[in-house]
Length: 114
Length: 114
Image (cartoon, rainbow over all chains, first blue to last red; front, side, top):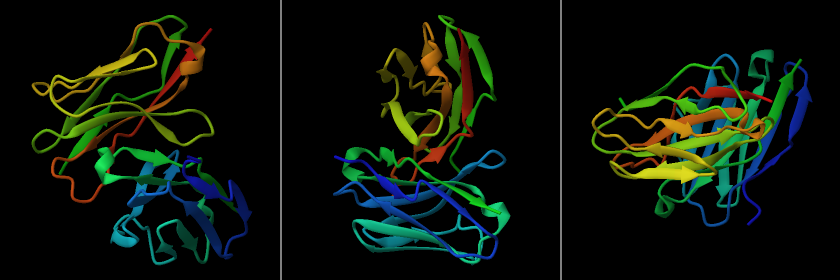
């Protein structure tokens, strides 16, 4: 299996621009998670889906952030408009409930907002 | 609510030293417990896990024992190598986990010097 795939791996943009991060979970997994990691705040859960349905978005910092999962093999995290404080590494992870909730992480997208 | 507390880092050791990273948890009942490792520039990956009290998880020379009486899951390795330098995260999956999410500690950075 290819593992969780994220794109792009690096993104540099200017304040005010729209940013879209993409994730392809492991085939057959029924949970998908979006995390943000910074030095100051550590690893934060932003939102997660079960069978393509958002379950808990309480970690989404504000309305500028949105996430979708149109099908079982694709999810996006969008930031519009972006701000310098959004600079972080964003991870996508997937899991299978029958697998004991072990989460498999992607390599992350390093976002820099200038 | 459920939570995980890890010892603060960074932890700096010389090669072949003994490693202990403390992890304690607060949870209802008997959650599943995990250690994840994050190497520089990569996503988190599962290192080991234990699903019930007194279980010992082990992998790559690392071990952790699920201690119900002390609500702990300390990570140990008898002889660390430079290649073990990474950030280590303790995590739990709550009992009767309806959401599939994991609760992570803040991470402990380990630096091993030659």
